[in-house]
Amino acid sequence: MTGDVDAYVNANFEPYHREIFESLRELMCRHAPHAQLVISRGSPAWTGRGLLAIISRSKTHLTLAFGRGAAFTDSHGLLEGTGKTTRHIKLKSAGGIDNDAVADYIRQAVALDGR
Image (tube, rainbow, N blue to C red; front, side, top):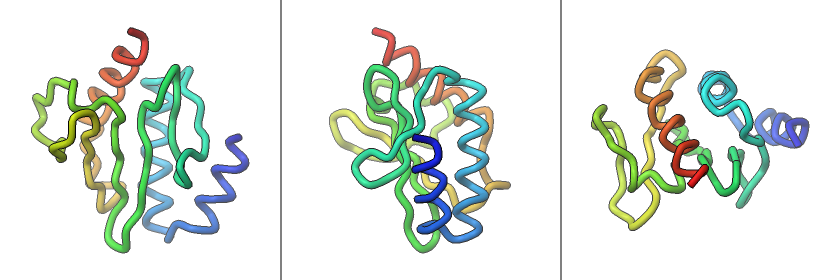
């Protein structure tokens, strides 16, 4: 499915979106190596037993949403959202990604997915 995702990203993401996406892909590969990169609900997403994270784009940023983010411990204070399950972070540039925070969120998503 990675080819499908690459085709989607190349066709739909602006260059700065692609830079952010590639940074996220590296973090996911490092901290969720068994996750599958797929197109889910019309967007790139990583799945394990369930949805770990999904990306949506806007003109100014990418949003990385964690399917069970409401259950995370957010010691970094970056998660947004008020729903019962999902939390997200907005990413405006690859250089603006807090790698330590995103890695922590990814590890929490993997841990919850394993339960």
